[in-house]
Structures are given as C-alpha cells and as structure tokens.
Image (cartoon, rainbow, N blue to C red; front, side, top):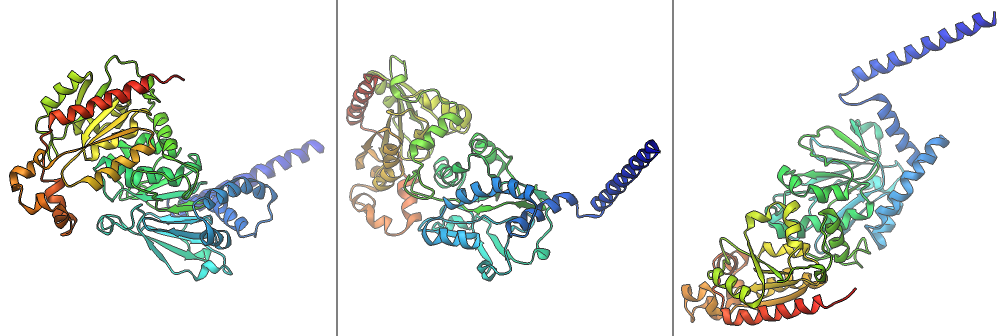
Amino acid sequence: MMREAGGSLVLVAAYSTCLLLFALLLSALFAPFDLLPFHSLRWEMMGNWRDGLSSNNTRVVESLEEIEPLEFLMGRLVRGEDRSQLQKTGFSCHTDLHSKVCLTKNPTRINNNNLKFYISTNNDSEQTNFSPILIHPYARQEDKITLRDVTPLQIVFQPNKTLLPLCQFIHNVPVLIFSTGGFTGNLFHEFDETIIPLFITSYHFRTGVQFLITDHKPWWVRKYNRILSGLSRYNVINPDEDGGVHCFNGGIIGLKFHNILSLNNTDIPGGYSMADFRSFLRQTYNLKVKHVKDLSEEKPMVMLISRQNSRRFMNEGEMVEMMKEVGFEVMPTTPQRMSNLDKFSSVVNLCSVIVGAHGAGLTNELFLADGAVVVQVVPFGLDWPSTFFFGKPAAEMELEYLEYKIEAKESSLWEKYGENHTVIRDPQSIFAKGYFASRAIYIDGQNLNINLTRFRDTMIQVKKLIEEKKKLVN
C-alpha cells in the first residue's frame, strides 16, 4: 500500500509539473515578442521590493547586494541639493556651465523605438509631479550648433506601473546613455567631448554599467572598442538595431565634462585625475613605457605630425634634416596612420617627442610616456587655442611642453595679404567677426614656412630636457 501511494504521488507531481510548463509555454507564445513571463515577474518583484512591497526574504537579501552599491555609485555623480533630491525621490539632474547629467536609482526602462526613458515612481512620491524632461545626451551642452546633430531623449515619470511599456530585455545593471552624434571624425573632439567625459562618468562603476549609444556610428564603436570594453563588460546597445523595451535597475543620461582635454579630481564624481585616465589608457592599449627615461633608444625619437591640408609645414623636409642634425631620429606621421588607435598608440608610446602644428594630431600626446616632450608650433593668430587646447592639458599629463610661436613672416598669410592688411596687423578684429570668419583665415587658410634657425634653438632645448629625464633614476 505504501508503495502504491508513493507511486500515485509521483504521478500527481509529474502531471502538475507538465501542466505548469504547458501554461508557461502558452503564456510565452501569446506574450509580446521577446518577453518571457518569468522575466516580467522578476522585474515586477524587483520593482515591488524597491517600493517596499515585497516580503520575500530571499529576494530582499539578493536585492540589497544590488541596491546599496548602486545608490552609492549614483550618489557620486551629484552633490548638495542634487544629491538630497536623488536620495529623496530617486531622481536628480546635475547641470553646470558645460554639461547636464540626469540619473535615477529607480527601476527604469527605455523604448528604443522612440527614445523615451521611463522612470518608475511611487504614487506618493514628489517625483510623480515631475514634468517630462528633454535632454541631449552629450557632454558639451553649451555648443548649440553641435547639439543639432544629437538626437534628444525624453524622460517620462510614470507612477502607474500598468501604463509602463512591457520589458522585452532585462539588464540587472544601470544604463548609461550617450550620443556619438556630436562632433566626431576629429580625434581631439572625440576625446575631449566623448571619451574623457565617458571615463569621468562611468569609471567608478568598475565595468558594471551598460552603455546605450544614440546616434550610433558603427565605425566610432569599432575605433574605440578597447576603451568601451575597458569601461563596461557588456556589449554596447544600438537603439537602431536593438529595438524594443530594455529594462534596467537604474540609469544615467548624459556625460560629465570637466575642462578641455582634462579631468579635475575635485569635481564630480571626484577622485580621478588625468594621471588616472592615462593609466587607464596604458592598460587598455597595453602601452609598455610609463616614463621616458625607460626608453632605450640612442637617439630620441621625434614624431613629426605631417599635416596634408591647412597648417601644413611647407619646408617639412628641411625641418626633418635639421632635427636629425641636432641628434634626433625623426618619424613623419600622416593623419591616415593615426586612424587605427589600437596600433598607433603603441607607436606614440615609444617616442620621446611629438612635434606638430596646432591641430587634432596633437591629441596623441595622451599616449606619450610621462616626461616626454610636446612641441606645439603655434600658427599666426592662434595663441589662445594652442595654449588651452594642448598646452595646459600637457602639464596635467606630466609632460614637458614647449611652444614655437611663428612670426608673421613664417605664415602664408603674410604673402597672401601683405604686412599692412588687417589680417596681419589686427587679428583680434577678425576674431571679433565670429568663429567662422576667423576659422576660414587662421585655421583653414594658412600654412607654415618655419624659420629653421629659430626652430633649431627650440629643438636643442628639447634635447637637453630629454637628456635630463634620462639621468633620472628609480
């Protein structure tokens, strides 16, 4: 009798299991595409627990491990009243001169088909009263011209969970949304307005964050794949291809900007400097040389950035021969060679010196070893951008920096306009006409014929600096 009863129980259990599996299968077949019922249930359980409605002790323990670090990490991105609002409502935006970053520690979901970012709220929360927010997920908010190329995203606050779009893809990490629709195709702007702000905003998550890139450019993702992989352990989401509704346990929209090609370790999120970013680059690109004194070359290697269009060295061949006479090996490098950072960064890292006219190519100073020398040839009329775009950042990178400011006669503008023209006599009056008027002349409209005697003195000074660095001992 006991054996028969036991057999009956087994049959009943098996029958019940089959019915349950059959019910789940039917639910999956008639549910919205890509949405599994138990995924929805898990998401709702997570949302309910965070609203203080769950009594499942196992789920609470598991959630605590996810939530406490998330609240701390989100809190690093805001201060003062912004942090208080984040703690009180679960949502906050940090806005300053340059950037705007909005974040939530609440469950959130984004509909990739219309770029609406839904934040789940409590009915009694102050957040319920928030109006929808439109945000361009780009680091330089003051650049209104560039923002035209950045698709805005709408943040929607929804206290009624039944009105939220159903989750089709569930991610147990926060999402960081940013755009590659701004100023791309230029190494300086790519690092200044996207890569460094991305590091600032995401590095403290220790790869536990999912990137979603709007205005997605496949070539950009390929170019910076190593950096993206170093900051996130997850594949990038492209809204154009990864459609549907993606759900996360929190989210950040936008990137934090500190300064031109710079990090400020006292600014939000705090603690990270240019030295930290350069250390990250060395690890990401497997750069072997940390300090220029570790280079074993007999003659220091100079990388000469050879521009093909504007700000071109018209006597580049003579410059190369002169630098060799001073005691350098010289490697002229064109922009085409710089396009593959995976390979080119290692080449830069083996150089003791970079020489170049003001332009995006000097951004490669990021890959130099500490103590290396940057020589910026300053075109006529471009003193301010030369110093602030590359000179000041070089000091933060622990590099030696020298400027060679050309005289008016070394510029092709002298021959084109004559010494008495306003372009030569009063550059400030040209700049007063606006960015495009001045750019056409001083950035796009001049080439350089370097005075080899004066420039030789600069390179002798560089040689002495390198020799002094080589004498350093550990």
